[in-house]
Image (tube, rainbow, N blue to C red; front, side):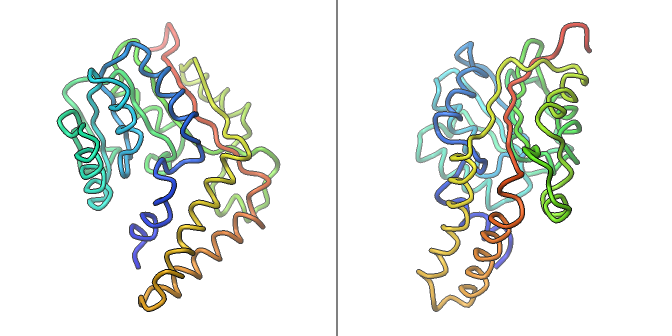
Length: 247
């Protein structure tokens, strides 16, 4: 089974694909769409859940999503049709780092997709290219809550602590106007949902040729979480505006 299909199954019970609960997502989008409408872009949209929730916030929101996965984009289109918002959603199959648009956006999203750009700061630089004057960027990425092991760094990446992360963002000309640090419950719920969904699929499909592989993947990922990074990894989502005086 390919990685795309494994990811689809793993996130079937947690479509936001990040360690945030529904209330946290709603509050962040409400603040990012404080004017009640506008153009929204998600760089690395996956199945489009952030965009779908933004579109549900009001009829004056129009959204575009960019992703390289045809399966994820197809999932986003189907979900948009089910929710009756397909006329206000445009999806692009391409590398988010290479995406261009003729008009800027009032809210640019990239939550949990910084790897596509090579890190948090390059992601912000890419988002800046699409941002309308006075607009917001909503970005989410990991940080280390405590000193990680070398194994954890090798597995998840070379993050900073929370204070250093925010300081680096501010040094690049961004002002946080809101933020959310995922709680232990949100982090744990996300991990249980992902690896539990994989395990359940394998147990429900014992005759599938991929069942043993999927169950082994669920076991491995759950063990890595519990043994390697659970006590060190954190996740922060920042709502940002450009600092006055920065181009």
